[in-house]
Amino acid sequence: AYSPQMPAGLDFFDISRAIELLDKLQRTGEVPPQKLQALQRVLQSEFCNAVREVYEHVYETVDINSSPEVRANATAKATVAAFAASEGHSHPRVVELPKTEEGLGFNIMGGKEQNSPIYISRIIPGGIADRHGGLKRGDQLLSVNGVSVEGEHHEKAVELLKAAQGTVKLVVRYTPKVLEEMESRFEKMRSAKRRQFFIYSYTL
Image (cartoon, rainbow, N blue to C red):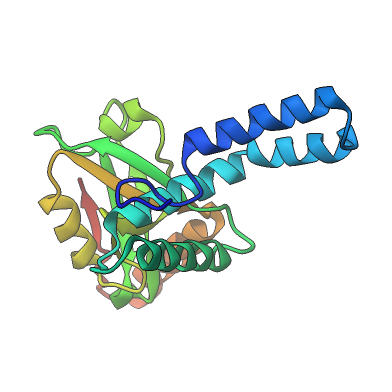
């Protein structure tokens, strides 16, 4: 049964129970063990865990006033879209950071006005993000507390991060090569003919 509080089909305890059942099936010998072991590896994989985390995050934040079934269906489609968009790159991750007077401890750069995604360009040593360890330089910022920042202006991400209170939920994807290319492009534009070019970079 569906419930508004519990994402359908991807609850951590459901996955744990499935793994336990697979163990029992292996002991009975009714199913070829190699097939069961392959399924166990999938359920215990980092990818499966990442799918569950992103699904749960989207389910909690999706703005749909409808039945739990419709909400779960919309969440599933959004989760599939997020992973499809990441094809060829690292899969999306959910990173939660506490928001304190100390700030979040990282810099972002990029945005629509620079024709680039928004990226984590620096992790401040000793800051919240550094101590937490879940965020990396080269992470592309996909959403802040359920609000997408893909294709948005730099200032939109800054406003969302500054307005966040308590715990900040970030969906990110690690694509360091794209960040390196972006920084190289900005550096060339900076030096070419001494033109003035403002690179948006904000410390949070």
